[in-house]
Image 1: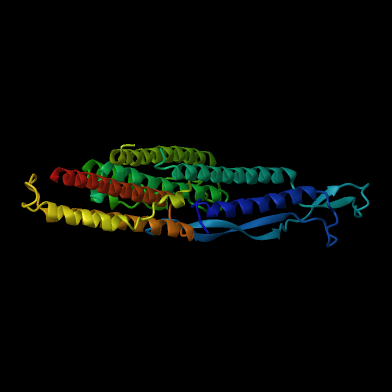
Image 2 (image 1 turned 30 degrees about the vertical axis):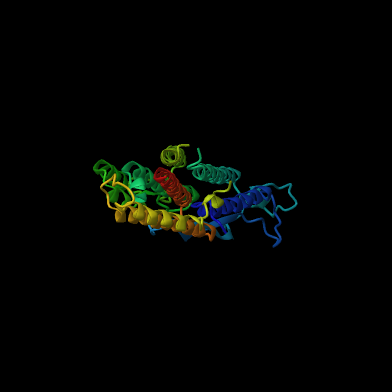
Length: 143
Length: 125
Length: 114
């Protein structure tokens, strides 16, 4: 099919990747207090791992270098140990009154959330810009 | 006859600049797509293109101008602000994108104006 | 009007018309018909026309190729396709104007002979 908006293939990949990251972060925040995950243990923070794949740049004479695109390699679990919180009144408390809470730091998640949103919005701006440049190009020669 | 019509140095230079602007936009798009990629080095137009274009325009030689070929290269002057070696700074990249968009608008208008003038000269309307 | 359809189709009637005009320009330049007004010899004029037609045709081909490449999804910059379409359209208009002027001057010459 026609590729009118050239040069934004990697942008689509980045938007996808950041969207996945935002999903994972919101899942982490939602499960910040889940002491029983499906496997019975406290919820483990999920982390998105990105990898780069090379795409060909444009340039009819091959002047473009290979430009890397980002994609989600896998979503793995953060293996840091669960947080131990002193809460003797909790039914989950062990002999010493400690409860194992998910290894999620809300501040860390919020910082990640902001950075992922920033990247997402920057890439949206790229698409908008590419569209307006293409519209200008199509108007060449029209008086 | 057609050759002479389209071989004017100003017109060729405007077209070449448009080529370079489009290529630069692709580099900027890619830099923003890799904003979070660890170790990514930002890319831009190869720095020699501008000086070559100036030289070719000064010489007013159509052959020289149309033989220019803009290309992308890793920006060696970019510094990293994060631990993972990523050299893309969001604000600077957005500024560059805006400037490039304006250059694109300017060059597009110039090329369009030249084409319209040619048409006017030929048909009288 | 979509830019894809704005390439004027190469009118089939135009080429033979121009060739005929070029041929009659040859005849008109022989001394027995007209006092020679200009010193340029006839063969260079008709060959000039022939060259014009070939160049315009070549440019139409380039523009057509650019549009095909764009439609088939090849990674060429949009502005190159748009600019070659405009250039093809302009050179085609040039050819049409040349043909119109030739036609006018031919008709004027024919009127003069009466």
